[in-house]
Length: 418
Image 1 (tube, rainbow, N blue to C red):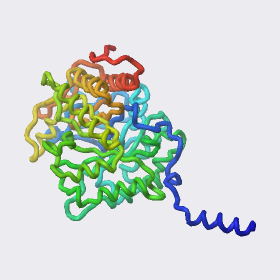
Image 2: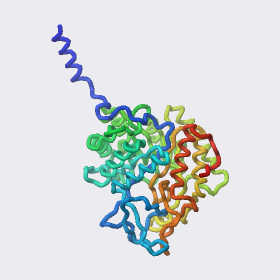
Image 3: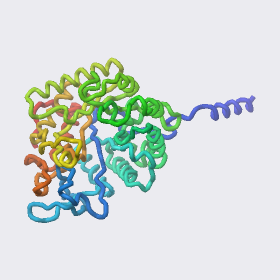
Image 4: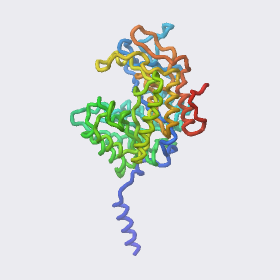
């Protein structure tokens, strides 16, 4: 009898599918996106040959970082007003990432989605700089107890028969080699509905070269949700602002709704869709959020509206044949008022989680990390300033907004004063 019981146990052990919990750690201190404000993190400012941004005429960034606290900086081709060489950081330096996560902890920024661009998924290697940046980021997140998650950006996916298969293999690689969902030390990988949250950004945008019906998105989602070893995940999709109506900035393809209905969180990309210079703009922003959440509630999907401090694309547009020349600071920051108005409006409308664009995006002038009010001087490149505000102003505002989201401080339409 005992032999039969032992045999039955052995058969069950061999035949029972391995669950996703084998690969992913348990007990993350961030079991849900709800109550958090997460920012996007690019991490793409890489120094080559000991320098960065040497040519003023080819500058592609519109706001300059405050580099006074970095342990290592690099010379550029720009000059400060006193004639000294302007310096820049390197995203590939461990010290850079450690400092960024230290700031998150200091100012109460809940955490970040690490951008993983499609081109990096084709042949991932441990010594690749993008993988090393992720390694440093997950270590820093654990050390500083900041939420962290992976966001796959499909930008760069080619039209010629390429699909999301490499994303599947890349996820396996990162889970195995970097243990991103099972960090050493404190597990801070962001979960949602009790499962590791993976974001897929770039679905439904008309300027993409790929067809969302032909790139295997549903196969990717099914893998991340149901694979016996690497699955067991929740999914967030990044879509255009007008995803619900399939118009304006969104492809008129109802297949997008099929994809969204397979996800757990929808995050509409709202950068450039709302401006600080129109009087009733926050009413339009509010109505968009309210109606989006109504749609999501019907299909049991959570919703993370997008907030951004402003926008500037002057230098990037000046160096692009595809983009009409943009003015400097086309969506003014107004010293943080525009940023705070969005936070207040989104929370007042009922949002319980928010996505900030972005933590370190200096190319589009949306960065919330420390930037300088006195950028380099140039007759060619033009930069926005901080409107006289301290370099840490947007980190500080983000921390305040996180407290407001969690009802730790009262709701306030007016931007807080320091």
